[in-house]
Image (cartoon, rainbow, N blue to C red; front, side, top):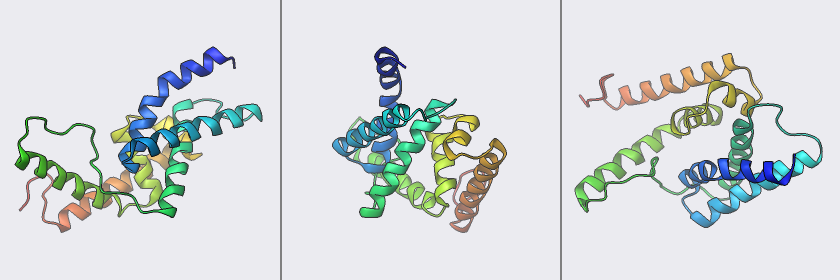
Length: 171
């Protein structure tokens, strides 16, 4: 792989990886550092003639996920929104409502196993395919589907316990 190929990979993936890191770390500098470390590990793997045979995105997300997990072991994660967008019209009540719902969603996600949380986050927040997630986890697609199903079912049960119906309205 030449420098141009590496530059194209960095350009294509670094913004997505940064958003993923920022969603969990909540600090731009720390997120940039995590992305830089991800590419450092990727280059080190290439130098050892290792690395992904396919599904590069899943491979990079897995490296980043491991870096974030290591940081969480040292320090618990901050309270952050799940999405990048917030209402911008200055409506404080709307902003507070969004933050409240996002905090609730984060709390629910914390009840999942780490693998379920990784699958649900990559699938529904990052848009990765089952094949990419399977490659990242080193598991087959059937296992990814099972993790996704169990994770979503656990979220549904948790919401039901809180009084939410399947239509999303609180009872």
